[in-house]
Length: 182
Image (cartoon, rainbow, N blue to C red; front, top):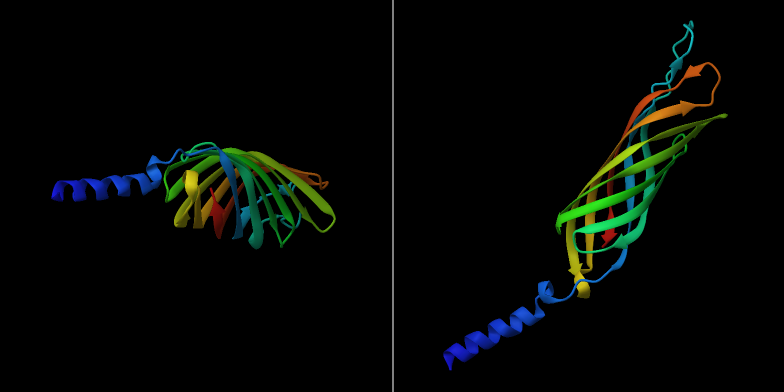
């Protein structure tokens, strides 16, 4: 009888365990508040009496994510980021790997539009996203809701449309705090 009770409770526990539930294709979305910098070292084409560097200092903004979670480990999503200072718009597509519920790595192409007073500058490059997740709800089919701390690093080549400035390499680093549904 003791063996039946022990075996029965183990059986009931394994049926309720989310790992035995089939994990299905599902929506992946999230929102984060971001802060960071973009170093865009545009420089004069010809020597000038004043140095002209356009470096975006600390910025504040929002990142929105929308995509598909194929399995618990793999997702594809689009991330749109808008900042409040010097108006930067970043568009990135990520392929993300989540080896455990608490950590994910995403990589993909990124295109930015940086506008400041009277000019527009573009950049194209790669984006790397590292995220630490703290799940607070596990739903059926493997869906997780979590608080997320993230870092986006975007090395890119910037193209300026402002006369007298040369194009150049830039690096953007943004930290984020948000919520993910994946």
